[in-house]
Length: 382
Ligand code: 5AD
Ligand code: SF4
Image: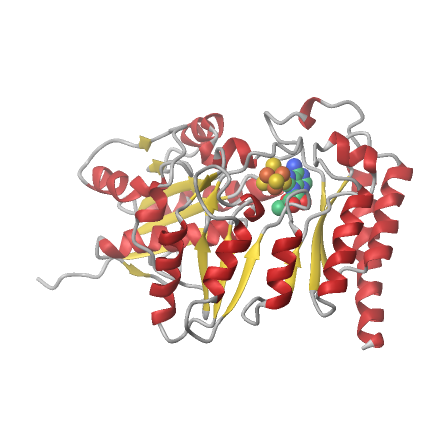
């Protein structure tokens, strides 16, 4: 009998970190002999890598998983796995297991590296698997990887976040900051650059500026300098920076090193000091503007982009107008504007002054329309 090729299909929700982790899921599947399929219906193993940052992202994942019911009824032999930030929350995993009896394997971000084992156990006949762990480590950095992002190589430099911005679920689903060793990072980059197609390296972390502070390691600026010193024709970018930790030294490296991409994503979230304090962002409108000024002075052609949250609890019309005025003042190259979304277990969930959806909607639309105008006039000024 001819061996039939087994296929997998992964659907990824959320940020670049999830995209990169799906490269690891693919790597593990290929180690087991699976090949990438073109769609869900032809796949033997179907994986959903979920996001939990806002309710909308979570609902989209749930909708997609729910739509598998029919396929799985016809083909009970297919294996369905759900992982990622949503299922790092035990309450969500248990809800998923109860609601979708056709899901075979559920695990979180902390035990992604054990996926191969979970799959093999299920294939060997074990009942439905739900694995949860709060032991956040760096094991995920050691698994096989199948790079899928064109000419860009994603490189994790650290995991987790210590900041506890009051709206954010990330510290709960990704654990505390854990930096990888700089030697390991440099090795991984050198290895990736051996493939002739990689002309871009993007360093990933929730707050790359605090790289190395949790262990005896070099600083982020030093790491960037070492990466730029590697041989080859490639550009280096990173995401994401926290404005409270972006140092002049890092700005200087971006200014002085040819290999550094002239771009910084610097999420401001709000233009109101009152709201920034309630968000626990640990910087002010004024200190943020000072950093932008320094970037613009040292790197005049630097692209600066940001994230905005509108409708955070207690955001008055005046507070919102301060965000609008900040957008007008900075004239970002691009913005990502989000309506505040309540996340279970965060401090802001319990705050008074929750803003009605229709007001959030109006505010987000105002930001987006304003940004469109700003982009247009920047183009005209060129
Ligand atoms: N509601 C809305 N937006 C959020 N973000 C993070 N948490 C929330 C939330 N609860 C946004 C922030 C962050 C980006 C990745 O997602 O702007 O910078
Ligand atoms: Fe979330 Fe704040 Fe950490 Fe970014 S810095 S991941 S917004 S807690």
